[in-house]
Length: 489
Image (tube, rainbow, N blue to C red; front, side, top):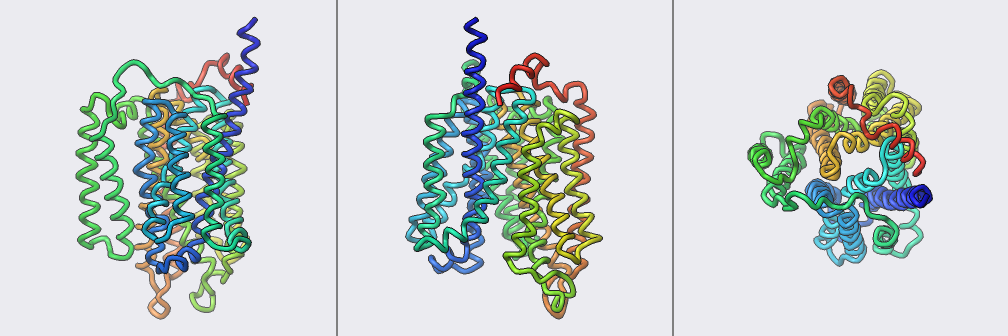
């Protein structure tokens, strides 16, 4: 009797916790969309050139890539709520520093401290998995991803308005700090713990493993960041990429021998995560590879370049809004879709939709509605894939590795975006028009075609993974567990 009476109370607490975590993700998304809009005012405040402003996002992405695996693994070892609290405090401190920094060096330090925002999702997904299973877990994770996408929309839309209404850019940058303070209160008072940290077995941190992973990622990102301007054969670029390859190979050898590895590579193979992770890299290339290129194409004047739509930044924002709205809506719906067709097919469909969007642009790119349609398809694919991916990864991985597995997915997706940014900048530079110095139409058509091809490779990876995992693709919970847990949200 007492057990049955306690179930509604537990379900109510879990449902409320997902709502609180969704607010945290909303603020995380707002932070991502908010600061880049203010780049011009930030440069004016600190007297930084456009080239120097590139570090505004580069430092954030580097910090995120390095911190996510560390925080996610520590969450698996010492408790996901505890590490979520630490991550939120770090981002809060970074946000305050960004708002009050007297010089650009301290501003970039603040941006580096904001990097752990990328660990929110892996830690929250692990928390959700600790309390829910089956469709309820997928639905909760979908809500988190949807809140993240919606937060990015709010951030991009409100940053300019806040900057116009507030007396200085410092005050404008204080808005995310205030929201992160609310998030800190939430995670310290309203978010229950998930599964307790494992008490059996070693709880050591693989310092050498995390150091090697961090060096390899940092070297790779630095090399990719320098490649578009310096060229792929520049000594500094070759040195960074060489260090990434050598350190990465040594890291793999170390992890396969370590008693308590930073990343359990054997788990990745046993759980069948290799192909989904490879598809995640393709996914990252697909969703980040055309962001800058599409913007420059839309802004190009047909009279000068022979292509483009000559849109203002405000009109370009309207076009790209179709993508963020599509991602928000379909991330919220992904659990229902996955229930009907399965998580593998849902992710495959998401990747295929994005590929169709780029193939559409190869044929149709002369009207605004062509780009609105393509961005809507990209958004729908992003929502389906990004909303389902974390749930699938946690389903396949052991509970003790849920955080690091989801963190690896996030890192691989970001690395895919970094690779795409560097490679496609070089690709477009190979198609420059001699008279104007801008890329030719053939460059954009090639870029869109390559993106579609990369995404189709991801589709093949997921299809093969689904075939291999067919007997266990929906093994999150037994039917009885799914019936109980589905009532929690």
